[in-house]
Length: 324
Image 1 (spheres, rainbow, N blue to C red):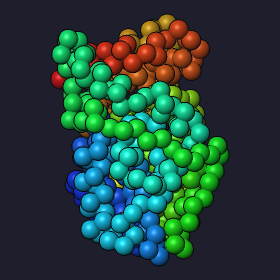
Image 2 (cartoon, rainbow, N blue to C red):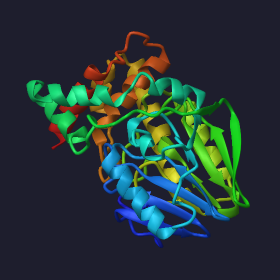
Image 3 (tube, rainbow, N blue to C red):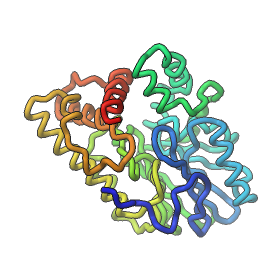
Image 4 (cartoon, helix red, strand yellow):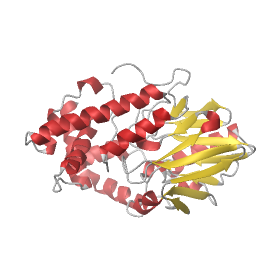
């Protein structure tokens, strides 16, 4: 699994990358916790932004770069799409003042339960939480959650929606629940490009907050059936269908290995520690296997498997320490 899954013509460097034909991707290596990607679609003097970032300073820096690249189209973002509710894809929404903000109905609902103040509170408590606090600082410490005004979507949908950007059509399709309840893809046929949100983590372990895993596997099939050449993931380098297949293979392998241990009577955390993930040693954030197995165990029928953030983050903190 050491082979790079990035699309060779695009380097994995921080900043704005010109995809051609009025398409752009904003990348944030190393793609781990909080370091998400975003996109800009431009045509005929109009633009649509796919996702904001984890806080206001990072989002403003991104928008400044986009306005330099497209002074007319990006001067005022009129349409913003949030691919799902996690804060690293929507906490910067306030920077697009006056924009129509589109998200799936379930994503918009979930945003109300995960305001920036929640993460700010976690970081305030971190110094008193030992190893868990160290892990929270590792994941969220680089970001400023105390100076965010949460701005929620103004328009939601349930299955599909289209938006025009000049002569381009942007197809928004709900493929969740998978990573989260409201995951959507933003597909631009004219550019042969799709922005996947966190349906794709490239060269990093995905994290299955929601499931079921079958929906996520099927979402990968939908991407591979598209006429696309350029695939912008939620985290990691720009990729092609090789990256989609690698992520799908990870999900299938993890599901199958977790099921063997579930049937054998292992608890979820023991199963997470027992599964051989050596083929994915080059991928970042390997401790997320703890969350993925816990979610799979609930899917297999263990309704009592914990789903609370303190338990899951504590498990990830322990695995990260063991592996380091």
